[in-house]
Length: 198
Image (cartoon, rainbow, N blue to C red; front, side, top):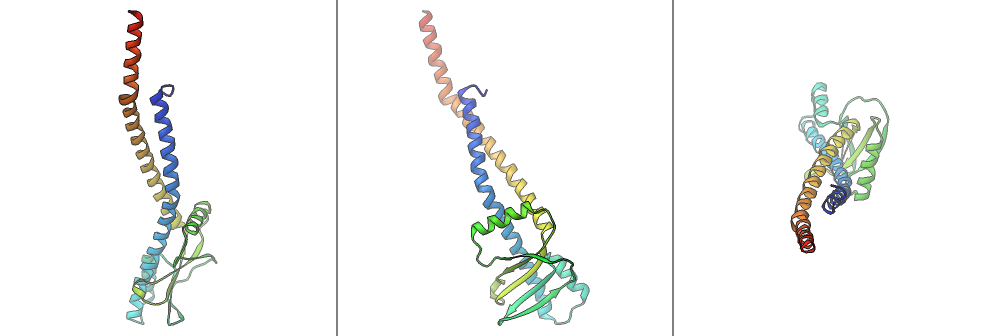
């Protein structure tokens, strides 16, 4: 099959489609990382509303709110004052801080690539803008292991979908080339051979 014209066209099409999918794959994973962290900020803001509504909540409820949000603590900045709204005890130092208020695509790609490379579970600080302008800024700390696991799972799903699309596209082009180009050439060659024999 590889030696035939249509077979070579099939392989080249598969390669080019996979290269194109790879160029789309990297920004896609970077955007997924951003949306994952933004969802943590959103959950943290919703969790902090319970404390803002009632100044006194039990420690068990506070830990449950933080666990559901997937963060260790929540800091809100209102009227130029930082306020630790929800907190829990965690061990380890904060290894990096990411500001998601106005990130560039290159920054997102760089940070996502580093998260893939760094396999160690670290604690990071994430800064963002609160929803509905509920304050000036929201800040959370969270672990990187769940983020990396989610990114790998998303990446594998995107990769599998890309390979499926590439295989289907290449197969359709392979069949089209055989019908439109190769079979007419074969008929011409066969007619020429019969003419030569006659």
